[in-house]
Length: 108
Image (cartoon, rainbow, N blue to C red):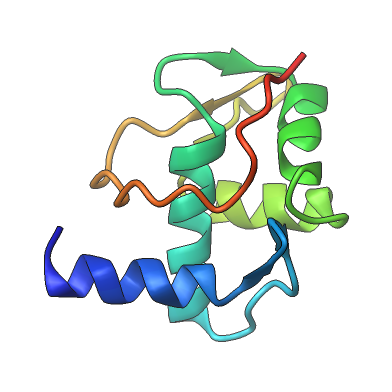
């Protein structure tokens, strides 16, 4: 892991307390770091999710799942068809450094 990746992982970790996101960052650069982390730790590549599954995954870290979902879609980290029937993690972008910030619990 490079120094930049380590610094970014620490910055993202600072946004959490006891595995929960304390607030959605207002600064775009910090929010982008958070969203990349969430996309790579909560959602599997090449898997299709329902809106409920996306909400359930996001609720594990913050109560405002709709804001996080919207930010992920706008940032291009989650893709959704026009009808909003499903979601999937976007295939582009770099992999975020693996830094578990929440308890790994199975999603139903």
